[in-house]
Length: 250
Length: 134
Ligand code: SF4
Ligand code: FES
Image (cartoon, rainbow over all chains, first blue to last red; front, side):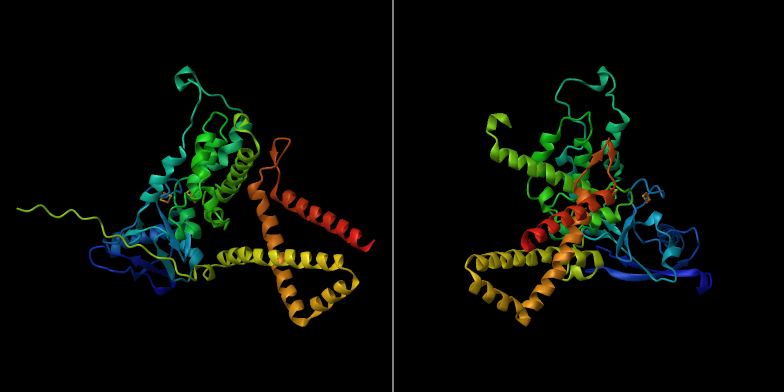
């Protein structure tokens, strides 16, 4: 092992479902290399020190969204978080908040997987035009209207940052609503009405109290907080319309 | 040979502490912003009492002024004013998130939206000041 000078301590949450009743902390010293991320540190532990440590990762380049963990209390993509930014350490590495812990740093995101299809995150048409009839054309401006919201990699950092989701797991949550907005804003889509019926419920947009942390932690600049507030405006307009207009005009 | 029992994996469900909002600056500011709504309601009530006093004539207005000048009232109003400022600043800075303003097809910069709200506030305040001092 390198001298103390060029190593950094990781304080990692361990939870073994077959033995532990509570998660515990375990400390590991890993080499502090300039180009090493927290994920590199964990992989060093897994390869060289303790093969039983469990965590998720795949792409190592901020694309797959599977390496999200709380680093010193902040939800981060560990493949994009450098050890040297936390020197001299120690660095606390914990599973994402607000999710059940399956093992060590692995959380169960099943709840999100159940919620996502409820907002129909795909293009809905109200005509019979299909891709077989040709492409749906779109101008650069039309693409620009939703592009930001389409960058989501489902990393769940926003759910980990959201106290509303932590307190009320029924809440649809930031990424799901941002994805609904992404399709609503798509010029090829006709599904806004359908999605509104789901999101106008209390567990939809009105659950959000605009803490804004989802946008702060999002590694892809999706701005879920913005999507939710814009949706609230839309939902409020619908409510007013339903209130003042006779049914046949709505 | 018996087949092993199939059991649900034992997951650990962390619970949120009552004090979650003290653990992060942004959470704390958020809770203070929510709390500031009470003080907004307080100022609305205070103004209504003022208007009612003015309506009831000079003596009632003088009573109101004496009441409002009591040290404990001044203290409450100072605290309420601090929360009012917090409320204004935080909500103004959040507006660009809710409004997608486009100027000639380009997204309006957040700073422009925020600044125009302060301009609006200044105009309305100046009008009210003119109205009550003229
Ligand atoms: S909105 Fe951002 S933080 Fe949330 S899941 Fe998508 S990429 Fe991750
Ligand atoms: S490993 Fe894929 S996003 Fe980090």
